[in-house]
Image 1 (cartoon, rainbow, N blue to C red):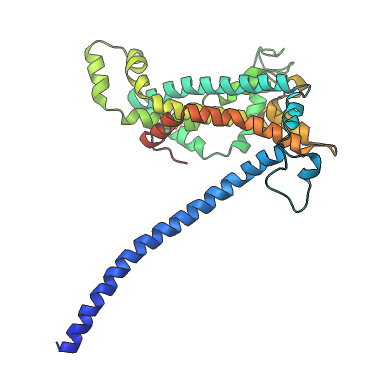
Image 2 (cartoon, rainbow, N blue to C red):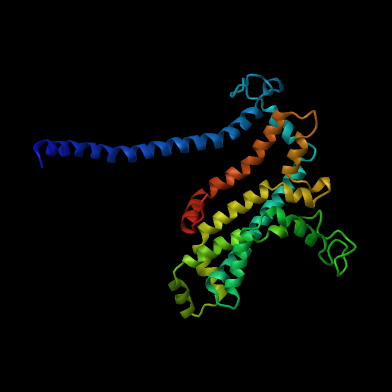
Length: 308
């Protein structure tokens, strides 16, 4: 090798080293830019909703729009709360959300424990069906579930064949039962129980503990993070649900807050600042529940493999 070639190779080494340092920094910068854009795109509609909830009627439709209101008009929140059916809608939403949450935590934990720890025939087939249900769109299940709820024997004036009455339509049971155990909840709890070391169970069994005792006293306390995740997701899903209560109920006194919000914004005289105030109030319980369970939710998402 000539002296010129050797000197060129020596000069190329610093260039390669600078390139090795450049790309990791560039990837990190691009990642931060994309994350910032995604965060901004996500939070902007929420901030706009809160901003509009404090505006006057004239400011709501002002052009060009202003993001920060001239003053905080709390009267919009008073008008939203003072609706004739707001109290009843709040009770209906709480009963539906809490009933769905509690039932999901109980039944999904029991089903997840059985599929993860107990040996019985057909266990893998049942788990495959649960996984298969995760792929079925919820919209395609609305009509069959509605007919089942309507035709339940001996409920709502039905005979033993499910005819002659209204079944569980316009009832709390009709709202809660179809969401009492979700495929996602069963799958998540099964995955979590599968990751707990078998030594806990074997030690308890040597001490004479029965399967339900092992579940209740040993495994369930260890599953608090996964239960927190399941509880928050179940509460959020039921609290924000609009389609199922709308289809199931035809009586005004059974309407939830989501249906009340739709009624509030319908018609030519709708006040959008009041609608945004009601939407902000409806969002608050979800935020409060998440803040209280934040630590468990993060732990549960990590340990059970649930992301997003």
